Image: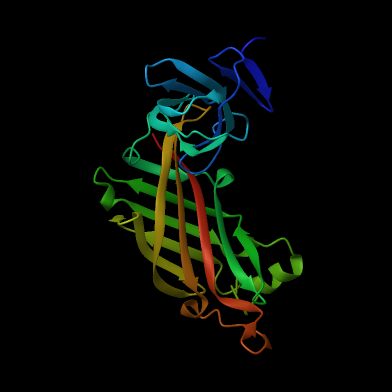
Length: 287
């Protein structure tokens, strides 16, 4: 078919109907969180508004645009359920050009979720922690049982969060290690069956939202601060409305008296001194 070339998962159409390719552009279409936007369409217009090339992003968000001429133009990016984007570009006089990662936001997205009470959907949420092991690799564990709620105020800075985590639900993929983590050396689940986080405010920081709060772990309560991201809201297949969030923080084990360790060499211990916590949440708005 004249003017069309099949390139992997992409069908690319040049405007010159089979004319020799001068510049080939490549890149990816992603969400702000880095997930691929499959099926996104990309169109390049030259300085006079004529279409020079068109492509469709594959399942991995990657695209290839062939047949581009050097010079200024406009790159249009569009996908279902996402806000379109128009970018001014200058195509270089080169055989290959990286357009980089192009980010599309979900249609109807807002900077903050709608006010109301959101209950955590634990089936689609994860609370995990990573520890340095032997000064070499990383061991990751996650808690599989927890409940919580997010109360979003009309003044978002007055919003609150509370989460209760079942200590015995820790899983690292190794039964012997999990049993040790549940023992008095670490979580001491018989005496302290629950971890609790609570916060009564949200703050805007230089790089995004901050969630200051209090974490109770192994009977010790300490202030902690989470780097918080609001990922968007939308309807679900069951008639509800959901919001998604992610958060990270780093904890010092000694702050919570998690002091068990074994030295294996000069300056090397079985476990590192900090825990890197990653949280991904979906929450359902209550009617």
